Structure formats: C-alpha cells, structure tokens
Length: 322
Length: 254
Image (cartoon, rainbow over all chains, first blue to last red; front, side, top):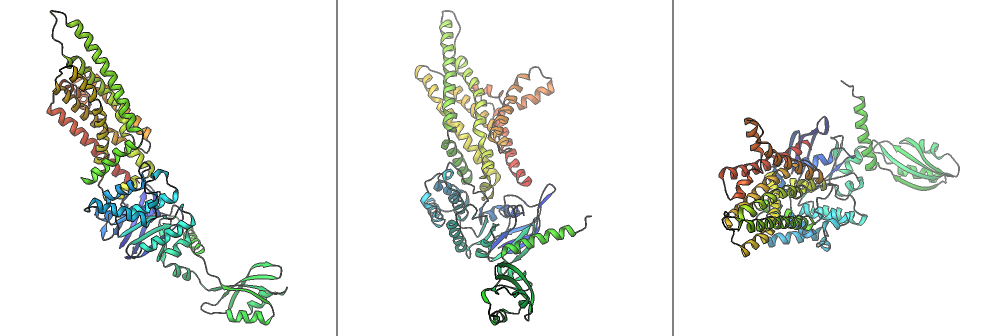
C-alpha cells in the first residue's frame, strides 16, 4: 500500500532523511519511532505530498506522490503535528470546508452526512458548533483526526496522534486507530514507546534519518534478548544467596540488583533456550529461604530503543573520517 | 473550479469572522464619504461662480467625480495591503497551509481561490460607496458611463495591487511584514509615475510599464482602452503566477 524506496531529503547540507526504505501492507498499522529530529515528520510530509524528496521514490495507494500527487493525496488522510484548524470556523464549518476540497462527486447532503459521521467517530460531535480556536488541546487533536478520516482515505498518516491528550483520550484514540486499521493502512509516529507496542503491527525505528530496525514489537523485544534473564527476590536470612545461585546448572551470571536488609534481588541470566525457573525455586526452598519473587525480565521497548539508537551513534563514531 | 470557489468562500468568510472586513469596509466608506463631500462642495462652489452669465459650461464629471476617483485610487493603495497581508502569512504561521498543500488541490487553485476571496471583499468595499453615487443620481443627472468605467478601473487597479500583496504574503509568516512590504512596494510603483516626465526615453518606457496607477487615469475619464485592459489582466496573471511559484519553491526549501 505504501512503498518507500531510497528516500532522501536534504535541507542544504543537512540530511534529514537518508536513504529510507520500507513497505506497509494493506490494513497494517506501522509505528514510526524515533527521537525528536530523527526525520519522522519529514518522511510523513514527503508521503503526504507536502514537500518533495531530494531523491528516491514514494508510492502511496498505487500512485507515485511526485508523479501523480493529486491522485495520491485523494487517497491519503493526514494529521500533521499541529492540527491544521482555522480558529474562526466552527468544527462543523471547518469539516465541511475540508469535505469540499477533498471529496469530489457527491451531493451536498451526502457530504454533510460524512461530516456528521466523522465527528461521531472521533467523538467531537458535542463540540460541533464551537469555534476551533476555543477548543482544548484534546479536542483540537480529535478534530484534526476527523479531518484526516473525512474522505475515507485508504492511507492514514498520523503525526503523533495522541500528543497532548489525557490518558482517557489516549486510550479512546488508540481504540479508534485500531478500528480504522484493516480498512485503512496507517502510519503513525510517536515517541511514546508503549503506544507502539499496543497499537502497531510493525515498528520502524528511525534515527538520524535512517532506519535502524523494522520488525514486529514482540520480535524486536525477542531479537535483542541474547539470553533469558530472570529476576529473583530472596529472603536469605543473612546468607549469601548470590553465591549459591551462581553454582546452579545453566546459570551464566548472577548480578545483584537490590538489597533491603536480608532481602536481596538478583538478575540471573541463563543459557539461551533453557528454562531454569524450577531449579531456581527448588534450590531456594531447599535452603529454607523465602522466595518472594521470580519472574522473567524482558527488555522493555525503551531499552531496545535506547540500545538501537545509541549503537548507531557508536558505530558512527567508529567510522574513520575521510 | 469548485475547489477555487471553496477556498474563495472560506477566505471571504474568514474576513467577516474577524473585525478586518468590517473595519476595512466601514472606514473605507467613511473616507470615501469625506472625499465625496469635499469634491461636491468644491463643485457647488465652482458652479455658483461659473453660473454667472457668459461663463463656460461646467461638468460634474470632470469637476467632481473624476477627482474623487483619483483620490479613491490612492486610498485603495493604502487599504489593499490590509486585505492581502494575511492570505498566506497567517496560514503559514498557524500551520493550516499544511492542510491545503496536502489536499488534492493544485497551487493554482489555491492562489486563485485566495485572490477571488480578497477581490470579493474589495468589490464589496467599492459597492458600499454606490450609496454616495446614488445621491448624485437623485439630485442631478450625471453620465453613468464614465462612472462605470471609473469603478472598473478601480477594480482592475486594485486587483493588480492585490496580486502583489498575495505574492509578498506568500514570502513571509508575519502578517505585519507582509502588509508593510506590500504598502512600500505599491507606494514606490505609484510614485514611479511622477518621474516619467523627467526620465530619459529608455527609462520612460520602463517606468511607464511599471506604473499601475497611471493607467487608471483613462478609466476615470470614461475611456476603456484595450491596451490598459490587457496590461492590468497580464499584470494580475503574472503576479498570481509568481505567487504559485513562490509557494512551490517554498516546498523545495522546506
């Protein structure tokens, strides 16, 4: 549905997007993850036809955004970082204007129906007669979303759709995005990591204009897990639990994580693919210690993200300057 | 075409949503009324003196209406930058330009829509002054044709001013900068006409090509010349063309 090949954007001497390649299949939600200034917004602006790329190709809904921009734009809904609202218009007036410039060949009553429908779906219908300039941040964001889905586009490009919303609104917006997937192909950018894990089918991690990783959230987590790690909390009554645990078969390393009085926590890595939970529990019980906690500890997306984006920086430093 | 109209309508509505439209139209009517009163007072005084036996013919058009149009053309020069200054600047500042540029619209449709919206406001501004002209028809018997050409001239000249205004507005995010720069450029173009007499033959041609205001004289006299019509229409087209190009080049620069 969306195909990006060798996309590059330079502003003078600054390269904002550097040889980007990825595909998004129909009905998929792709998360765009990266630190601020990584090139997320620039990529989205190129895909929506707001600005041309310096090099490369982008195809949206079967149309090249540079060769056939109008066809591509007709099939794309876009929510920019700041919702593009006219403060002096009411929500309904605004959406009617957007409908006029985006939807062709339908009767005005049908157009009104679409406006009412998109207001209901984004839950802004209670503010329909309020001026856009007087809306709260959450409502602005949702009116922006209403504007993006108004013409029922095949592709939705959402630049930080949940920014500035309160927790309830965030959950509602995520739900709405999930509802939209399937019939729509969605790219959304965010720097909120759990959001990606909850909403997206696949994640593109981008840093300094380059793709660092593309995969499903669960694969990304697994891929970065070299070995299985476990967290154990033991009340060893003053004895050295760490020493004992490291002698168990299959244990690679034991790192003390925290200690409170006689209660100690340890991060234990084991050989890959080997489940040592039973042996661990048995050994601790045999010593008559208290086993307070035993759980597999997984690398969170935050850690993956940080490790990926910092690895990139390291490898860049290592590269000799020409 | 429906896209152009949608944008034009949006533009016109947004003028009326803020105090801009009311202030621009209201104060223009006030200033027009003042000039109207001054011209008429002068005409009445002159006609009283000339009405003596043995004096020549007097004509309300040459003595009152033409000078009135001349004055109003200068007022338009002060007024129109206020109408065009926000067209692009405001959209760029607030980010709504992102909506227009990612909608299935061409740059030309956007420019034409904005131009027609501004032109409609200007036309309304002129239409309000017909009240004064109507008074002349009630109490006198002026010729309607030179008045009509005068208004046509005002509209064309104003439209040319506005095409410059749009171009300048497309270059900045700041309305005030757009307004002041437009005003300065228009003032310069106006005063260029004054230098035509003292300039050399070559320079004279250049200056007269740039002089938007000089061409208005003939319209106020009641003359519609094809060359003037073509001049104004090409000036407007060129201005709008440059505006569309300026928006396009902005995309490349990012």
